[in-house]
Image 1 (tube, rainbow, N blue to C red):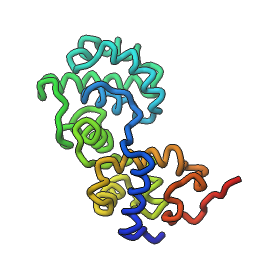
Image 2 (image 1 turned 90 degrees about the vertical axis):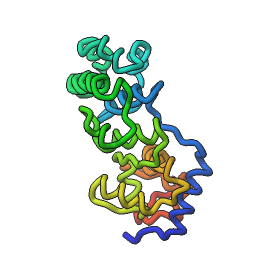
Image 3 (image 1 turned 180 degrees about the horizontal axis):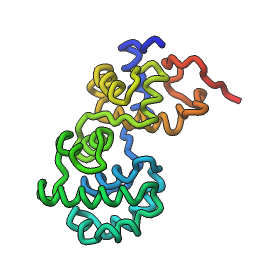
Image 4 (image 1 turned 30 degrees about the vertical axis):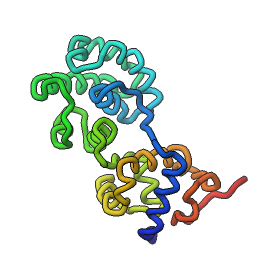
Length: 215
């Protein structure tokens, strides 16, 4: 599939920005620590499902110290509606222990330290760096991976390859919000089974050959 030109990439993000100037992630959080917990819990789960569970959790947990006081059993009770809650609870408790012991209870601001935490991979680290600390990182989830490859924006066989390709292709002015725009676009417009091309503001720039038409 031919890639978009540099001018088309600029236009692509200019339109997404015009449509949604201040895009936000859909997970609920109150500070960098609760964001880290929410993103960790969201692996293989929906944001809606995580938000339902963390609504009660974050009423009593705002710090790693609070999480340790709650304990693994208490955490499991509050997140048992989330998939893989047993292993996630173990990771979150161990994460809290490390944050207290090695980082003074604060969430580290660099990717290497974040990825050293249990249950935290590159995507989670990028989300935290971007949302909590304003770093221009790109967190590649399944939606973003699909949109980048499908549209001709940036191709890659792995999330890391797509991330690196996007970092080179996206104009600096759009980098901070780029992953939000692409994730939301993939979630609500450029959907996996049937993209809503008639409702797409960048349809004319997109290289996807099997575009849908209005009913």
